[in-house]
Image: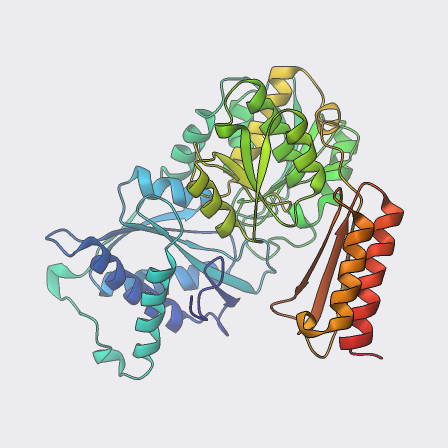
Length: 458
């Protein structure tokens, strides 16, 4: 994979890193790469494009649409919709690709561009590499002769608006559950983002009494002290409204964090445990197995194994979770952050879909979220970041010796995980075991060794 595309598309500060010029080039390069994948043909490529509420979304959408249509692709604008809606509507509308303009849970100034294939999955690495190489090549050419075709006349792409985008997505979500949500009072925090229409609408139609908060659409306050990264907001609202459950999404609604009736947070691990155990009980979880990352709590693995299930562990990132799910034929996987994939219903993490699956379990069992969450007992977990001048911890014998001693202390029921940050001068040390004192001691061993050998302050 090149440097332009991260694990979740192209991101940066809008109009500085992610400029309209770059968006235009990504549109042209993307249309060309898609045509190459399709093998040409007499029909034009068709691309759907959605965005979250950020102010910069309109600027980047306009540039992206110009780039796509200048290369001959027809564009269907979906307006403000969640990222998973783009993945679904790409398939439903028979498009060759989908584009989402969003920086998810990132701050207001940021934005991003993410591509989906015709079947709703993220682009393969080789296609991202092709797009990136085309964009890089454009920098060495004049705008009028960037090396890509420039159709004229009727061959230029057309633009249409699809007003039914949210409605289609809501109907799809409703079709994934059989239960009514009547009798449940639900607080939903929309993070002033892409969920502001769809989330309250689907919950209301399923029969819940809905208290919707942070439903702004101006984009000036997306993710600002609200949503899944500020769960204390929904915690307070649950207590204020005496709700049965709270749901908090991020800016593009591909994540969800839940809060029980007592105001206690149930994160992605807890949600996966509840849904997976319910699916095992009903014989609906493929291979009685889910996929989760190395950062998921060991309590998730223990909860599933107690009921005959198992967990496939992946590298950090939803891309790797999805790869494992497809490789092993699984239909549930996700991250502790609340980015959860129900593959039989959608091809990417879907916060609203996950929320209604969780609420359906509550409705079907008649149990409060607090009782359901008790089925997973999280192991004590400690994460410490050590500021360093050198991130090559693997080459230091003293660090390796401390790691071996920590692993012996934790035994087979615990684990310790060390990795260098990809973006900051930090070494992250995470320990986990049933005994919190043992975890503290094990992490301290490794942290002290890292600090002695590599620390910025010695």
